[in-house]
Length: 411
Image (tube, rainbow, N blue to C red; front, side, top):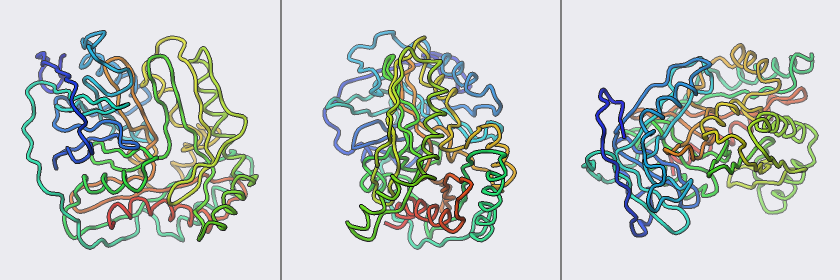
Protein backbone atom coordinates (compact mmCIF):
# COMPACT_ATOMS: atom_id res chain seq x y z
CA UNK A 1 0.00 0.00 0.00
CA UNK A 2 1.37 3.41 -0.90
CA UNK A 3 1.04 6.10 1.74
CA UNK A 4 0.98 9.75 0.72
CA UNK A 5 2.61 11.45 3.69
CA UNK A 6 5.55 13.04 1.97
CA UNK A 7 6.48 9.64 0.50
CA UNK A 8 5.13 7.08 -1.95
CA UNK A 9 7.15 4.29 -0.41
CA UNK A 10 5.01 1.14 0.03
CA UNK A 11 4.23 0.26 3.62
CA UNK A 12 3.22 -3.20 4.78
CA UNK A 13 -0.38 -3.78 5.87
CA UNK A 14 -1.24 -6.62 8.20
CA UNK A 15 -4.71 -7.64 9.35
CA UNK A 16 -4.93 -10.26 12.10
CA UNK A 17 -8.06 -11.77 13.68
CA UNK A 18 -8.00 -11.20 17.44
CA UNK A 19 -10.03 -12.27 20.43
CA UNK A 20 -12.84 -10.16 21.79
CA UNK A 21 -11.18 -6.85 22.73
CA UNK A 22 -14.00 -5.81 25.06
CA UNK A 23 -14.70 -2.10 25.08
CA UNK A 24 -13.16 -0.80 21.86
CA UNK A 25 -12.87 2.71 23.25
CA UNK A 26 -10.76 1.45 26.15
CA UNK A 27 -8.03 0.60 23.61
CA UNK A 28 -7.52 4.21 22.52
CA UNK A 29 -4.45 6.22 23.50
CA UNK A 30 -4.81 9.88 24.35
CA UNK A 31 -3.39 11.30 21.14
CA UNK A 32 -5.40 11.50 17.91
CA UNK A 33 -8.11 8.92 18.59
CA UNK A 34 -10.42 7.94 15.73
CA UNK A 35 -13.71 6.16 16.35
CA UNK A 36 -16.95 4.97 14.78
CA UNK A 37 -18.99 2.97 17.32
CA UNK A 38 -22.64 1.87 17.59
CA UNK A 39 -23.98 -0.62 20.15
CA UNK A 40 -20.41 -1.57 21.06
CA UNK A 41 -19.44 -2.51 17.48
CA UNK A 42 -17.47 -0.63 14.87
CA UNK A 43 -13.86 0.48 14.73
CA UNK A 44 -11.31 2.65 16.50
CA UNK A 45 -7.94 3.83 15.23
CA UNK A 46 -4.81 5.65 16.36
CA UNK A 47 -1.56 6.84 14.91
CA UNK A 48 -1.25 8.36 11.45
CA UNK A 49 0.02 6.52 8.37
CA UNK A 50 -1.40 9.11 5.97
CA UNK A 51 -3.35 12.32 6.27
CA UNK A 52 -4.54 14.87 3.74
CA UNK A 53 -6.44 18.15 3.80
CA UNK A 54 -9.05 17.83 1.05
CA UNK A 55 -9.17 21.01 -1.07
CA UNK A 56 -12.55 22.80 -0.94
CA UNK A 57 -14.72 23.14 -4.00
CA UNK A 58 -17.35 21.19 -5.98
CA UNK A 59 -14.82 18.51 -6.95
CA UNK A 60 -13.68 17.69 -3.42
CA UNK A 61 -15.23 14.21 -3.23
CA UNK A 62 -13.72 13.23 -6.59
CA UNK A 63 -10.35 14.54 -5.37
CA UNK A 64 -10.71 12.53 -2.16
CA UNK A 65 -11.67 9.40 -4.09
CA UNK A 66 -8.52 9.71 -6.23
CA UNK A 67 -6.34 10.24 -3.16
CA UNK A 68 -7.86 7.17 -1.54
CA UNK A 69 -7.29 5.15 -4.72
CA UNK A 70 -3.61 6.11 -4.56
CA UNK A 71 -3.28 5.35 -0.86
CA UNK A 72 -5.51 2.26 -0.53
CA UNK A 73 -5.80 1.18 -4.16
CA UNK A 74 -3.32 -1.71 -4.17
CA UNK A 75 -4.80 -3.52 -1.17
CA UNK A 76 -5.51 -7.20 -1.96
CA UNK A 77 -8.72 -7.73 -3.90
CA UNK A 78 -9.80 -10.49 -1.52
CA UNK A 79 -8.23 -10.11 1.93
CA UNK A 80 -8.04 -13.36 3.83
CA UNK A 81 -10.70 -13.44 6.49
CA UNK A 82 -12.11 -10.07 5.48
CA UNK A 83 -15.75 -9.40 6.30
CA UNK A 84 -17.26 -6.85 3.86
CA UNK A 85 -18.27 -3.61 5.52
CA UNK A 86 -16.70 -4.60 8.84
CA UNK A 87 -13.74 -2.23 8.93
CA UNK A 88 -11.24 -5.08 8.71
CA UNK A 89 -8.19 -4.13 6.66
CA UNK A 90 -6.80 -0.62 6.07
CA UNK A 91 -9.37 2.17 6.29
CA UNK A 92 -9.50 5.95 6.07
CA UNK A 93 -11.51 8.01 8.54
CA UNK A 94 -12.90 11.22 7.14
CA UNK A 95 -14.76 14.43 7.90
CA UNK A 96 -16.05 16.82 5.24
CA UNK A 97 -17.22 20.36 5.91
CA UNK A 98 -20.90 21.09 5.43
CA UNK A 99 -20.19 23.85 2.90
CA UNK A 100 -18.22 22.64 -0.11
CA UNK A 101 -16.46 26.01 -0.32
CA UNK A 102 -15.19 25.88 3.29
CA UNK A 103 -11.74 24.47 4.11
CA UNK A 104 -11.34 21.86 6.81
CA UNK A 105 -12.21 18.53 5.14
CA UNK A 106 -9.75 15.77 6.05
CA UNK A 107 -8.98 12.09 5.42
CA UNK A 108 -6.73 10.05 7.72
CA UNK A 109 -5.39 6.50 7.45
CA UNK A 110 -4.49 5.42 11.01
CA UNK A 111 -1.47 3.25 11.71
CA UNK A 112 -3.61 0.91 13.79
CA UNK A 113 -7.31 0.02 13.49
CA UNK A 114 -9.18 -2.28 15.86
CA UNK A 115 -12.55 -3.42 14.48
CA UNK A 116 -15.35 -5.64 15.76
CA UNK A 117 -18.47 -6.77 13.92
CA UNK A 118 -20.82 -9.72 14.40
CA UNK A 119 -18.78 -11.44 17.08
CA UNK A 120 -15.49 -11.20 15.15
CA UNK A 121 -12.60 -8.77 15.69
CA UNK A 122 -9.50 -7.71 13.74
CA UNK A 123 -6.40 -5.62 14.30
CA UNK A 124 -4.92 -3.92 11.23
CA UNK A 125 -1.54 -2.20 11.30
CA UNK A 126 -0.08 -0.03 8.54
CA UNK A 127 3.70 0.14 8.48
CA UNK A 128 5.45 -0.36 11.78
CA UNK A 129 3.12 -1.04 14.68
CA UNK A 130 2.65 2.28 16.51
CA UNK A 131 4.03 2.64 20.00
CA UNK A 132 1.48 4.59 22.04
CA UNK A 133 1.33 5.59 25.67
CA UNK A 134 -2.00 4.72 27.27
CA UNK A 135 -2.39 7.42 29.88
CA UNK A 136 -5.29 7.60 32.35
CA UNK A 137 -8.36 9.56 31.28
CA UNK A 138 -8.66 12.91 33.04
CA UNK A 139 -11.83 14.85 33.78
CA UNK A 140 -12.05 18.33 32.20
CA UNK A 141 -13.08 19.97 35.46
CA UNK A 142 -15.48 22.90 35.62
CA UNK A 143 -17.21 23.81 32.32
CA UNK A 144 -18.35 27.34 31.49
CA UNK A 145 -20.43 28.34 28.48
CA UNK A 146 -20.61 31.42 26.31
CA UNK A 147 -22.46 32.60 23.24
CA UNK A 148 -21.26 31.38 19.89
CA UNK A 149 -21.65 33.35 16.67
CA UNK A 150 -25.13 34.61 17.65
CA UNK A 151 -26.95 35.13 20.94
CA UNK A 152 -30.21 33.26 21.50
CA UNK A 153 -32.39 36.32 20.67
CA UNK A 154 -30.33 36.99 17.54
CA UNK A 155 -30.80 33.41 16.41
CA UNK A 156 -34.55 33.58 17.01
CA UNK A 157 -34.60 36.66 14.80
CA UNK A 158 -32.78 34.72 12.08
CA UNK A 159 -35.36 31.90 12.35
CA UNK A 160 -38.18 34.44 11.97
CA UNK A 161 -36.54 35.91 8.86
CA UNK A 162 -36.10 32.45 7.34
CA UNK A 163 -39.73 31.49 8.05
CA UNK A 164 -40.87 34.71 6.39
CA UNK A 165 -38.89 33.92 3.25
CA UNK A 166 -40.45 30.46 3.16
CA UNK A 167 -43.95 31.93 3.47
CA UNK A 168 -43.06 34.31 0.63
CA UNK A 169 -42.42 31.28 -1.57
CA UNK A 170 -38.63 31.60 -1.97
CA UNK A 171 -38.09 28.06 -0.68
CA UNK A 172 -39.90 25.25 1.11
CA UNK A 173 -37.57 24.45 4.01
CA UNK A 174 -34.21 25.53 5.40
CA UNK A 175 -32.15 24.00 8.21
CA UNK A 176 -30.53 26.57 10.48
CA UNK A 177 -27.80 25.82 13.03
CA UNK A 178 -26.25 27.68 15.94
CA UNK A 179 -23.13 27.19 18.03
CA UNK A 180 -22.28 27.32 21.73
CA UNK A 181 -18.79 27.79 23.15
CA UNK A 182 -17.59 25.71 26.10
CA UNK A 183 -14.40 26.25 28.09
CA UNK A 184 -13.08 23.59 30.46
CA UNK A 185 -10.81 23.97 33.47
CA UNK A 186 -8.43 21.34 32.04
CA UNK A 187 -7.68 20.01 28.54
CA UNK A 188 -10.60 17.98 27.21
CA UNK A 189 -9.81 14.28 26.78
CA UNK A 190 -11.68 13.08 23.70
CA UNK A 191 -11.72 9.51 25.04
CA UNK A 192 -13.88 10.60 27.98
CA UNK A 193 -16.40 12.22 25.64
CA UNK A 194 -16.52 9.13 23.44
CA UNK A 195 -17.03 6.81 26.41
CA UNK A 196 -19.88 8.90 27.83
CA UNK A 197 -21.56 9.30 24.45
CA UNK A 198 -21.34 5.61 23.57
CA UNK A 199 -22.82 4.57 26.93
CA UNK A 200 -25.61 7.16 26.97
CA UNK A 201 -26.53 6.97 23.27
CA UNK A 202 -25.74 3.38 22.17
CA UNK A 203 -28.18 3.57 19.22
CA UNK A 204 -26.29 6.55 17.77
CA UNK A 205 -23.00 6.49 15.88
CA UNK A 206 -20.31 7.80 18.23
CA UNK A 207 -17.48 9.27 16.19
CA UNK A 208 -14.13 11.04 16.45
CA UNK A 209 -12.24 12.39 13.45
CA UNK A 210 -9.58 15.11 13.64
CA UNK A 211 -11.11 16.91 16.62
CA UNK A 212 -14.74 16.55 15.50
CA UNK A 213 -16.51 14.46 18.15
CA UNK A 214 -20.14 13.52 18.58
CA UNK A 215 -22.93 10.94 18.55
CA UNK A 216 -25.13 11.23 15.49
CA UNK A 217 -28.43 9.41 15.09
CA UNK A 218 -28.38 9.94 11.32
CA UNK A 219 -26.76 7.37 9.01
CA UNK A 220 -26.16 9.04 5.67
CA UNK A 221 -25.11 5.85 3.90
CA UNK A 222 -23.73 2.37 4.59
CA UNK A 223 -22.28 0.32 1.73
CA UNK A 224 -21.69 -3.40 2.15
CA UNK A 225 -20.77 -4.85 -1.22
CA UNK A 226 -23.49 -3.53 -3.53
CA UNK A 227 -26.09 -3.17 -0.78
CA UNK A 228 -26.71 0.29 0.68
CA UNK A 229 -28.72 1.60 3.61
CA UNK A 230 -29.62 5.08 4.84
CA UNK A 231 -31.51 6.35 7.89
CA UNK A 232 -33.36 9.60 7.28
CA UNK A 233 -34.31 11.77 10.27
CA UNK A 234 -36.41 14.92 9.99
CA UNK A 235 -38.98 16.14 12.51
CA UNK A 236 -38.03 16.35 16.20
CA UNK A 237 -39.56 16.81 19.64
CA UNK A 238 -38.05 16.75 23.12
CA UNK A 239 -38.62 13.79 25.46
CA UNK A 240 -41.50 14.14 27.90
CA UNK A 241 -41.41 14.71 31.64
CA UNK A 242 -42.76 11.20 32.26
CA UNK A 243 -44.05 8.12 30.37
CA UNK A 244 -47.49 9.59 29.60
CA UNK A 245 -46.06 12.92 28.47
CA UNK A 246 -43.46 11.06 26.40
CA UNK A 247 -46.14 9.08 24.55
CA UNK A 248 -48.20 12.21 24.02
CA UNK A 249 -45.23 14.10 22.59
CA UNK A 250 -44.43 11.24 20.23
CA UNK A 251 -48.04 11.06 19.05
CA UNK A 252 -48.11 14.82 18.51
CA UNK A 253 -44.89 14.64 16.50
CA UNK A 254 -46.27 11.85 14.34
CA UNK A 255 -49.45 13.86 13.72
CA UNK A 256 -47.71 17.21 13.17
CA UNK A 257 -48.39 18.53 9.67
CA UNK A 258 -45.26 20.70 9.85
CA UNK A 259 -42.97 17.83 10.93
CA UNK A 260 -44.50 15.29 8.55
CA UNK A 261 -44.04 17.68 5.65
CA UNK A 262 -40.44 18.32 6.72
CA UNK A 263 -39.85 14.56 6.77
CA UNK A 264 -41.47 14.09 3.35
CA UNK A 265 -39.11 16.73 1.94
CA UNK A 266 -36.12 14.83 3.33
CA UNK A 267 -37.29 11.46 1.96
CA UNK A 268 -38.01 12.93 -1.47
CA UNK A 269 -34.50 14.39 -1.55
CA UNK A 270 -32.89 11.04 -0.72
CA UNK A 271 -35.07 9.17 -3.20
CA UNK A 272 -34.24 11.60 -5.99
CA UNK A 273 -30.52 11.36 -5.26
CA UNK A 274 -30.20 7.59 -4.85
CA UNK A 275 -32.52 6.42 -7.63
CA UNK A 276 -30.04 7.08 -10.48
CA UNK A 277 -27.33 5.12 -8.62
CA UNK A 278 -29.44 2.08 -7.75
CA UNK A 279 -30.88 -0.90 -9.56
CA UNK A 280 -33.45 -1.15 -6.75
CA UNK A 281 -34.50 1.27 -4.01
CA UNK A 282 -37.06 1.05 -1.21
CA UNK A 283 -38.43 3.95 0.81
CA UNK A 284 -41.16 3.33 3.42
CA UNK A 285 -44.63 4.80 3.02
CA UNK A 286 -44.64 6.22 6.54
CA UNK A 287 -41.93 7.12 9.08
CA UNK A 288 -41.49 5.54 12.49
CA UNK A 289 -40.57 7.11 15.81
CA UNK A 290 -36.92 6.93 16.86
CA UNK A 291 -36.78 7.54 20.63
CA UNK A 292 -33.43 8.69 22.01
CA UNK A 293 -32.58 9.72 25.58
CA UNK A 294 -33.00 13.43 24.84
CA UNK A 295 -35.32 13.70 21.80
CA UNK A 296 -37.71 11.82 19.52
CA UNK A 297 -37.36 11.85 15.72
CA UNK A 298 -39.44 10.88 12.73
CA UNK A 299 -37.24 8.24 11.05
CA UNK A 300 -37.30 6.26 7.79
CA UNK A 301 -35.00 3.39 6.76
CA UNK A 302 -34.07 3.49 3.08
CA UNK A 303 -32.45 0.46 1.42
CA UNK A 304 -31.19 -0.26 -2.08
CA UNK A 305 -28.71 -1.98 -4.34
CA UNK A 306 -26.11 -0.08 -6.33
CA UNK A 307 -26.22 -0.51 -10.09
CA UNK A 308 -22.66 0.38 -11.09
CA UNK A 309 -20.39 -0.54 -8.21
CA UNK A 310 -19.94 3.00 -6.90
CA UNK A 311 -17.93 3.31 -3.69
CA UNK A 312 -19.51 4.60 -0.51
CA UNK A 313 -17.76 7.94 -1.09
CA UNK A 314 -19.40 8.26 -4.52
CA UNK A 315 -22.78 7.89 -2.84
CA UNK A 316 -21.82 10.42 -0.16
CA UNK A 317 -20.89 12.86 -2.93
CA UNK A 318 -24.30 12.41 -4.56
CA UNK A 319 -26.29 12.70 -1.33
CA UNK A 320 -24.70 15.62 0.49
CA UNK A 321 -26.26 17.91 1.51
CA UNK A 322 -29.59 16.20 2.11
CA UNK A 323 -32.77 18.16 2.73
CA UNK A 324 -32.57 16.99 6.35
CA UNK A 325 -29.50 19.19 6.98
CA UNK A 326 -29.77 21.76 4.17
CA UNK A 327 -33.30 22.34 3.00
CA UNK A 328 -35.54 22.32 -0.08
CA UNK A 329 -34.72 23.21 -2.80
CA UNK A 330 -31.10 22.54 -1.90
CA UNK A 331 -29.38 25.30 -3.86
CA UNK A 332 -31.71 27.96 -2.53
CA UNK A 333 -31.47 26.62 1.03
CA UNK A 334 -27.66 26.73 0.97
CA UNK A 335 -27.83 30.33 -0.26
CA UNK A 336 -30.16 31.26 2.61
CA UNK A 337 -27.93 29.46 5.15
CA UNK A 338 -24.91 31.42 3.95
CA UNK A 339 -26.87 34.67 4.17
CA UNK A 340 -28.60 34.23 7.52
CA UNK A 341 -26.78 31.76 9.76
CA UNK A 342 -23.84 34.02 10.54
CA UNK A 343 -21.27 31.30 11.20
CA UNK A 344 -19.02 28.69 9.61
CA UNK A 345 -20.46 25.24 10.34
CA UNK A 346 -17.06 23.59 9.77
CA UNK A 347 -17.73 19.82 9.89
CA UNK A 348 -21.12 20.14 11.61
CA UNK A 349 -23.88 18.58 9.46
CA UNK A 350 -21.20 17.39 7.02
CA UNK A 351 -20.37 13.77 6.18
CA UNK A 352 -18.27 11.90 8.75
CA UNK A 353 -17.26 8.23 8.72
CA UNK A 354 -14.89 5.72 7.17
CA UNK A 355 -14.12 3.91 3.91
CA UNK A 356 -12.02 0.81 3.21
CA UNK A 357 -9.92 -0.23 0.21
CA UNK A 358 -12.92 -1.95 -1.40
CA UNK A 359 -15.26 1.06 -1.29
CA UNK A 360 -17.30 -0.26 1.64
CA UNK A 361 -17.90 1.95 4.65
CA UNK A 362 -20.29 3.93 6.80
CA UNK A 363 -20.87 7.66 6.74
CA UNK A 364 -23.14 9.64 8.99
CA UNK A 365 -24.14 13.27 9.21
CA UNK A 366 -22.13 15.00 11.93
CA UNK A 367 -24.97 16.08 14.19
CA UNK A 368 -24.92 16.32 18.03
CA UNK A 369 -21.26 17.18 17.78
CA UNK A 370 -18.49 19.57 18.73
CA UNK A 371 -15.03 20.65 17.66
CA UNK A 372 -12.51 19.99 20.45
CA UNK A 373 -9.23 21.88 20.76
CA UNK A 374 -7.31 21.89 24.02
CA UNK A 375 -9.66 23.00 26.80
CA UNK A 376 -12.21 24.53 24.40
CA UNK A 377 -15.16 23.03 22.58
CA UNK A 378 -17.45 24.54 19.97
CA UNK A 379 -20.82 22.77 20.12
CA UNK A 380 -23.41 22.73 17.33
CA UNK A 381 -27.17 22.18 17.05
CA UNK A 382 -29.93 23.10 14.65
CA UNK A 383 -33.31 22.26 13.20
CA UNK A 384 -35.52 22.38 10.14
CA UNK A 385 -37.36 25.67 9.62
CA UNK A 386 -40.71 25.75 7.85
CA UNK A 387 -43.05 28.63 7.06
CA UNK A 388 -45.00 28.17 10.29
CA UNK A 389 -41.97 27.59 12.56
CA UNK A 390 -42.05 29.31 15.94
CA UNK A 391 -38.64 30.84 16.77
CA UNK A 392 -38.96 30.11 20.51
CA UNK A 393 -39.83 26.47 19.82
CA UNK A 394 -36.92 26.13 17.38
CA UNK A 395 -34.56 27.60 19.99
CA UNK A 396 -35.83 25.09 22.57
CA UNK A 397 -35.25 22.25 20.10
CA UNK A 398 -31.67 23.39 19.51
CA UNK A 399 -31.11 23.66 23.27
CA UNK A 400 -32.31 20.07 23.69
CA UNK A 401 -29.84 18.91 21.05
CA UNK A 402 -26.97 20.77 22.75
CA UNK A 403 -27.52 18.59 25.82
CA UNK A 404 -25.90 15.62 24.12
CA UNK A 405 -22.45 17.24 24.02
CA UNK A 406 -23.03 19.06 27.32
CA UNK A 407 -23.59 15.67 28.93
CA UNK A 408 -20.38 14.38 27.32
CA UNK A 409 -18.45 17.30 28.81
CA UNK A 410 -20.08 17.36 32.25
CA UNK A 411 -21.12 13.74 32.86
